[in-house]
Image (cartoon, rainbow, N blue to C red; front, side, top):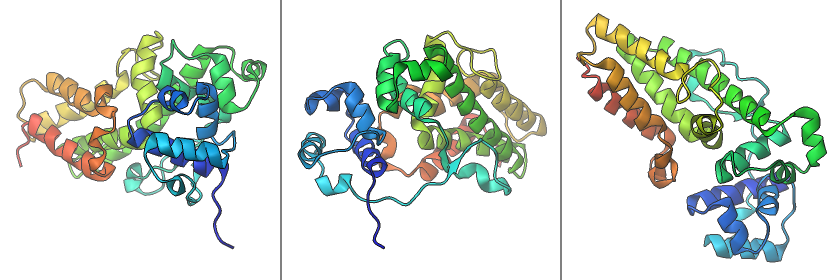
Length: 283
């Protein structure tokens, strides 16, 4: 039986093409004369797309309509963020399982910011009533806290596995930097919300008291100190260097898509190499 594109396939393809074009959800909605909520519902596979609308979207994005309806292989969803059996599993990213409300919320928070998001807009993207959202999530802040928790759970085990996968302290540190960049690239919407909106909403990141990077910074610093103590790193200000590396890896302004000329794995290795240079790695 030949593969057929589903609403979710088309919505995902439209979102990917929009991000490639550097267009916001609101910008595309305005271009094709629909509401931002309707555009979000289309990208989340909750609303079908007519041929006329598909042509309008393809025209606004400057891509062939056929590119927006290509079938995709089924993704493997993971209900929890648990590490695979093999140590190298931290480099693998299957789709993370989010219910329809959280999936809509993460896209809306990313596009409009936490303060610009409304429960009605999130409900439209999730194809659910506003009352239905409140039945499961008491407030917009609860949605944000849940998303941050999921992001930290997914990133946390990857950092630990990456560190354990290194041949020595320096190798573990390098792996952790690689894991950070891979997380940023493969979990773009979730990572963006974790880094930016937690601070703006006044919600501390799960697992840490620092409003910016929480225990991510502490985890990376511990690895850096071990490498300094072992003589692998000669940087005399490892804390300052770690802050600079975190900024390099997670700074939101770099997430516009301009760095997508490189594949995530290649980009991550490049960042890891830069991080080792910043730590003055002694080979």
